[in-house]
Image (cartoon, rainbow, N blue to C red; front, side, top):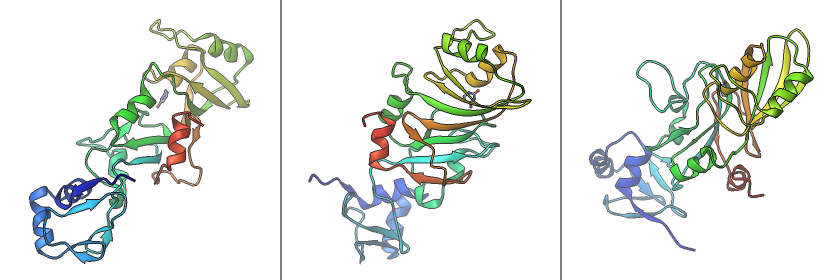
Length: 242
Ligand code: URA
């Protein structure tokens, strides 16, 4: 198997809040260990697939690319950074922080659910590209009854208030009543799309959660704000290869 070698200082700088220069100090202070042995030089090479690199006794995630699934809570922005408001990246536990991470795709501030966070731009592009039509599944609570006419309108392609025509979407009624619960599957991602599609049918979305991307469902064990790594097998499901 091919090994992926990187310098100790480069890894430390990309996986912690320390700059490259500061990581050299960490090494001279004896705070860095490679496979249990003290690191003496910033130039030492680390095998990302096989070695254990520790800072102050804590192991760093060496994996070259990181793919995370977060259950985004309402009230948090799906942006990398914001001067005033909390973002999904602010919620990441220490062990998952590294440079280059970004949320792949947008959810509104009040939308909950599956947020993909990665540092792999090419992968994010494959999931998000308008050309690939990777389906995104949402659960929505609506302020009124939902009927067969709306299901057909979603399937035919809704025309939004600004005249844009949506691609055919699947609307499934799960609970009908004065407030209804629906599942919506979209293969495109226009701004506020689910909310605007319901507005076009005379309804308002009261609550919205993304529950799947491609064939990969949100892990129901994740509480709002919690995050976990996406396994290699799940990545294939995301890309719809199995
Ligand atoms: N559609 C919306 O209206 N909002 C979202 O956050 C996602 C899809």
